[in-house]
Length: 109
Figure 1 (cartoon, rainbow, N blue to C red):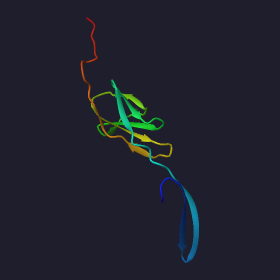
Figure 2 (cartoon, rainbow, N blue to C red):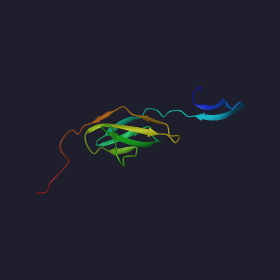
Figure 3 (spheres, rainbow, N blue to C red):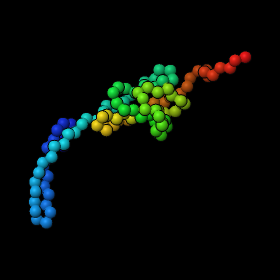
Figure 4 (cartoon, rainbow, N blue to C red):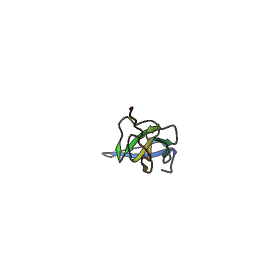
């Protein structure tokens, strides 16, 4: 096929000497762009918008992490897979998230 768009396929069926020729229309969709990950504090945001998102941590899917922006629960290597309405998907390059600075836990005295 020649890429995204509508294509006509011609096929032949031969069963015991009975031959039939027909065509079928097939629509081919573009792959989504390769997503990128941006960080703002502990939040990680996938770009572009308008897709279904699935986040991975250290190569494993993160159950329930399916929004465009997540709060990173721990240090590690994050990737995000985006999926189009046509079930075409693309995965980001790994993004290394590391907590820097003081702990955010406080205790009352």
